[in-house]
Structures are given as C-alpha cells and as structure tokens.
Length: 320
Image 1 (cartoon, rainbow, N blue to C red):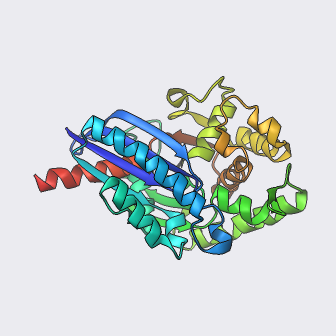
Image 2 (cartoon, rainbow, N blue to C red; image 1 turned 45 degrees about the vertical axis):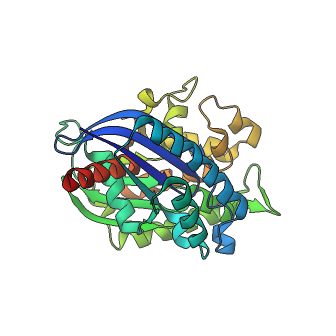
C-alpha cells in the first residue's frame, strides 16, 4: 500500500486525508481525516476576489496540515482546489501561499475534473452491492458549486453548476451584511428559482433522471443525515452509507428554513461553521431529489477527498 496525503480546499472548508491506499483493490485505510471551516469563498460571488482574512484562515489550516503530513510520512501529497479559487481574480496569491507552506502547487481543477474525483471517491466501495442499482447519480453539494455525475463502473457524464450552500446563502439570504434569520418566504422562493435554473443547466449535460441510486456527498448532506438520525453528536460511522427518505429531507429542510440561528446552533450534530448555510444546502438537496424523483439519498462520507487520495496513490505507483 502507498501512504498518501490528499487535501481538498473548497469554498467553505479545507479537508485533509492521510491514508494507506491500494489502487488495485480499492482499499483505503484512514490514518487521519479532518476538516476545518475556513470560508475561503467569503464574498467571492460578489467581489470576484479572495478576501485577505479568508486567505489567512486557509493558510493557518495548511500549516496545521503540513505538520500532520510530515509526522505521518506521506509519500505523495496532492492538493486540489475547487470552486472559490476557480472564480477568484487573485488566485495567484492563494497558489503562492499554499506552495510556500506545503511545497506543492494547488491544482485548480475544472468542474468536470472535480466531478470525476467525487464520483471515484464515492462509488469505489459501492461497486457490486446488490442493494444499490446502477447507474449512480453522485451529487457533491459544496460551498460554491454542486457537482453532478452519472455513471456505473465509470463516469458517463458530469457537470458542475454554481449552487453551493455558501453561494446561495450570500446571494439570497443576506441583507445589510447579515444572514436573514430566519429567511423570508420571498428569499426562499428566489433561492429555489436559482437552484431550479441551475438544475436545468446541469440536465443539459447529465441525464439526471436515468439514475437508479442517488448518492449525496459533503457537509450539507451529511448534516441532514445526522439530524434525521437525531444523533447526539456528529458520528461519521453512523452517517456513512445511511439512507434518508425524501419525506424526511423535506421535513428537515422546512424546519431549518423556519429556524433561527440559535435554534440551528443548538442541534447537537451541527458544526458551528454550517449554522448559517445549512438551510441553503438542505434546499439544494431537496430540489435535486424532487428533480430526479429520488425516494431516498444514500449518504457517503467518502467523496472527492478519497478520489484525490486514489489518484495520488495511482500516480505514486506509476512513478515507482
């Protein structure tokens, strides 16, 4: 097995996975997996630039991750940056900072590349399961964008559209610099229309309705699962491969969009960094389920981060 480190830097969070990986068998053994909310995409939708304070939060997390990677002795590091850094006019500042700290340049991947990595990470361990029909539709609801990928053993089609939980919150639920608490019916209607327009765009490329199993990734989806299970704290093992019905997703989404900041923050499994954006993220998930007619979503804790690790291990093996 090859020991690799994978970093996924998105709009809302930056995550690290150090793992021993065997690309031939699809085996991946976690050594360290962690996430830090840094809000790299703070204000990018409005200004087109990465804010100085957002960059510093991200670089601080990179310094912490550099120490862990060194301690565990990863043979190869791959750093992938997604939506926020694609959109920013000053992304060179971000690239230089990461290179100085971690010694590698972040790969600012395209939406299609992001979709394929997400699909690989989410489905590598699902192959052959009799209880899950193919093709899969993998949806990765991030902070700035959502990736849609349809495939079975391989990707058939993928598309990234700009309906992440942070982007939707900043675009529709912020007034006078503050998140409306709770949002008004008009704000929710406008957000829903924006999401539906993006789904129309995704469906031009990806046959969403052909999917037999919906697989949901990332923090909005996993948090909805934690709420559905009424977990006393966030529990990765309980969440991974859990199933949440459409009716339950609808109930949770409606509840989140009616609730105040304090009520959402009091949910035991809620990460503090998701309190203001979880309503938008849940609405994206609900809208997708309605669009494709999914009766349930299979929730995966393995996603683009695992896909990055598999690719890093394959590259390391090829280079030996």
